[in-house]
Image (cartoon, rainbow, N blue to C red; front, side):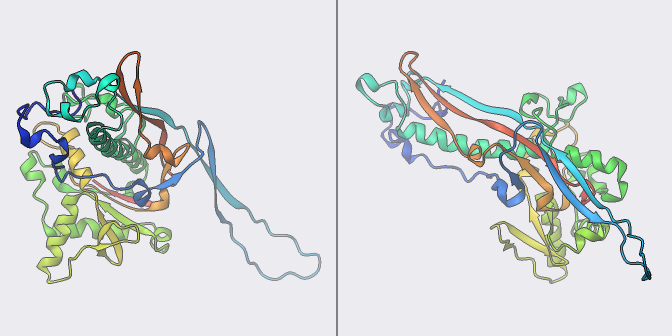
Length: 351
């Protein structure tokens, strides 16, 4: 079967002979990783990153002759990367395009099975590249090495292959683990615990404002004073906050951040909607009667969301080649990746 579904079109109809006339739907795209995360390259298995924290107390009463040196120690800590291999491997046979509109964009002669440099392959690669970008967001945030379907006691929607989630533990799982011992960094969203999807999604403007307010004032003082923290929120929380601002006749216009992301402001802090979270929660964490935690927000510094890669080129490269012997066309994207919450004391998580 062709990777591009052409079964909906009548073969031979002149209007669709040129597949370049097909129009891309305005689908939700993943944000650039570098706009949200702190990317480290040159990362291979078990590589450590060392951090300098701060020194101890200094400054005592002045001494006379033969002064005794003061004790002073500078703290350090480390994070160990453990990147896991990933790949996207697709095979396409040009014969599958027979009796479809894509027949007209195939090569001819001895090159007839080779789809390289055709309009058809250009479309497939473009869509595949966007899917790979979504993969990164999915695995970095929703990854769970213990992933299981709802029917098996897990969180992944029944019928969805858990192998799309069990590469590594993503940020949501790491945040959840961190707040189990640091409850002061957790803000509970009451609507998440409602017993129906309709009830869950009834998040008012006052509710959204209350979530952001609790998070802001729960933030560690060192993080608040850094001037670098930002809210990452589901679109549901952003919409609720927009309604709150409009209800108070306050400005609710989204403005671009320095990274080109659209954001509102709360107490001078960017509130960045992540609609891709909503899409993935509702698609892949659907428990049937309810969604698993459909409203989420993280108040954090970008530097704390570490992504470890051997090279940054792995984020964009899709290799395409043709095997003359097997007469198959192949597409491959591959690399290694890890997600690390680099400091499990500098965030506030709402769920």
